[in-house]
Image (cartoon, rainbow over all chains, first blue to last red; front, side):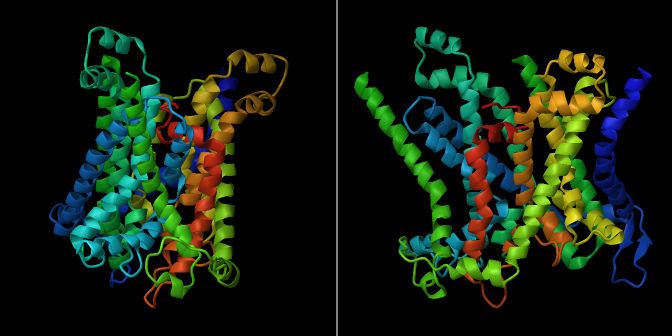
Amino acid sequence: MKEDKKQVWGLIAPALFIMILIGVIPVLYIIYLSAFKYNVFAKVPMRYAGFDNFRKLVFDPDFLKSLRLGLTFVALCCGIELPLGLFIANLLTLNFKGKGIFRTILTLPLAMAPITIGSMWVLITNPDFGPVPFLFRKIGIEYNMGISANQAFFTTILVDLWHWTPFVVLTFMAGLSSLPNQPYEAALVDGATRWQTFRYVTIPLLKPVILTTLFIRIMDTFRVFDEVWMLTSGGPGTATRYVSIHLVRLVLQSMEYGYSSAMSLFLLYLTIIICFFLLTFISSSREAA
Amino acid sequence: MGGKKTLRLFFIYLVCIVIAAATLFPIYWMVVVSARTKLEVFAGPRLIQTSFYTMNYYRPFFQDVYGRYLLNSLIIASGNTLLVIFLAVLATYAFSRFRVPGSNNLFFWTITNRMAPPAVFIVPFFLMFTRLGLRDTQFGLILLYCISNLPFAIWLLKGMMDSIPRELDEAALIDGCSLWGVLWNVILPLAKPGVMVTAILNWIFAWNEYLFAAILTSVRARTITTGLAEFVTVIGTNWGEMAAVSVICLIPAVIFIGVAQKHIIAGLTFGAVKD
């Protein structure tokens, strides 16, 4: 037994060491920094500030706006992607020729670097030569992401839909194909309509997969950075400054390390809390099923 | 009934074609732009391209710094994958075969680590890396990408290693094989498919990463994704070259789909949904 213990720690130690170095120490460092007013350009770079940074954070209109924008982005993306994905996946339960190729095409956006997706959409929406502004001009709308806040906001949503709807479709397709046949036969015997079968058989059976996908999508859209950064850098103005973008811009432009750390800590806590509640919710609904 | 089924099949094909076209068109457009000269790019949105302007590919990689960026990306992604797999195989073996305190919470920590916004970590990493002299080094990024990749790899491998019967390594241990011997000669050959899939996913994640690389490198260790983001400049962007670099950046993803398409859904959902 003693020998066992030694071996176990020997096996885990290297991984543990690295995780402490790059996972735990930075978090402790954020906690430490968040209690200081820390600006490299100031006369006295570091000054103890207690909870001042957090007090400032709760009343910071820019931060609150980015939080609101970020949550709107999450709600719109998830609200469109999940129903759309469910509809498409449900349509494709039938086996048909070419299904394999279709799935391969859908996998493509998932493996691409988000920054490539950003640059790809920059090329498509460029007001000088992109096909999208060209089409819009034909119906009389001047499309320019650099000027119109609304257009920029909806373009980032469109890019997220392009990137992640395939993921939702593929998970739902996988989930649907593993459902048992028997409830469907029972529904057929009872003379249920297609909609009734979908509503009262498919949805309850698929619930664990739906919730898991929703969870992953919520967390992913909340921390979205690369595509939006490449596409709009948060602009025009603050139209697409979602939380991650707001934080990065704050760090790069103001160099207020103390205040940025307070914001980081807040977002980290928020993530952990959302994760915890969603995961508890998922596992309880799994047990109920 | 027969007519209804034909109609449904027609509808399915219609939806599939529309979705496939919508998915592929942006990629097609990128390839088309990468084949155009500066003049052709601004000649209006024509969909067909017959000539191919290879200078867009040649100049950034052979006369500019992008060749080095590409090499950096390859080194960092491969180095990180080797490091992660080595550490993860050791740790997973312990998690799978022995009682380790805290292993019940492994899933929660993996998920939280992966779901946390990376932007949150840039301040401490920037200050730490400056102090440790790891800024703008390949090794720094190789180490850094462990933060989300290592827990993820352990989580993926654990399921696969749990399915290898314990009797096998116990028998080998009784026969006088050392722990290393068991890992190398018994576990690794059996876990090879799982390790390969984990490695490929890990490699793609490391290759695709942007934010940390952008903050923590400046010249020497810059990666291809960061280089791509630098294209949009004040004096005007060379769109053809930007498209060409994007296409090169896309190639690993395409290869990856050829090799491990089946596993990407399991990978992206932490094994919660299996294909």
